[in-house]
Length: 192
Length: 164
Image (spheres, rainbow over the protein chains, first blue to last red):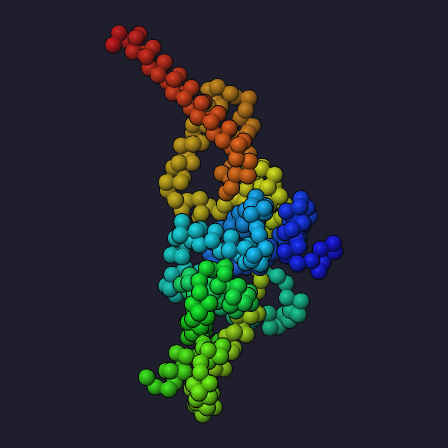
């Protein structure tokens, strides 16, 4: 309750001032959104958790290098995104998710979802199947489309923030988002 | 290019208001009369709704504890699935060689430190305490050099005793 209403920038300021509780709150706020982001880039929950841990370790270790010229969310998403892309390049994981038509999901590998408070057991199975299918198609997208569609349409960040995170022009962000949507629209037409 | 193809090509800018007023009006008029483009617009809207309700995932329970332990500089890490460990033959070979050298050191010279081996099951992703890690590595290098010296002494003694 201590940090309710405090902005991320206020939290990082307190953390820079020595408050480990402020860091705990940062972890609490960003744990799931960042994990979701990284998991949809990488497609592997084990790698994704490693990257998530490394992201927070870097926030901890480099807290004094953060300056409020950019939003804190931009900073932490940039760290996580760069780590995810490095991991992809290093292990060529994307080859595991080529457009072969086979499912990239193994039941045991799909991470936990945040529980839906309005869950209806009669419609859960259909919804789960649809969501899995959408995620499968997102993971199959080329990286340049995948990262923008996740940040824009799933995580609902602004075009401007995405431009800062990915270090690409605003126009390029909008163009890639549109092209990503068109690709997904074609592949998921039967669901729409 | 047909009007429908042009509509699909410009749809992104049409949505975000990136076209001239005249073009916006022309495309809006087309959508109102073209079933194909009207369906395309509905599909796109449906897709965006689907994407906005995609689930938020979470890491395995105990994430904060594992993070806290790494921040404190312990060696316990998230256990890597078997498939990942075997995905790189070179990494496996290198790990095997390092393990063999470490085991050799402890067996020959420091049997009372074998308790430490079981804890170091996998190298940490990031070393928080760099100085301690560096000291540890230098200590192991000294040990490896000591082993090499022992090997050479042993070989020399065999050479002398065999008369070669």
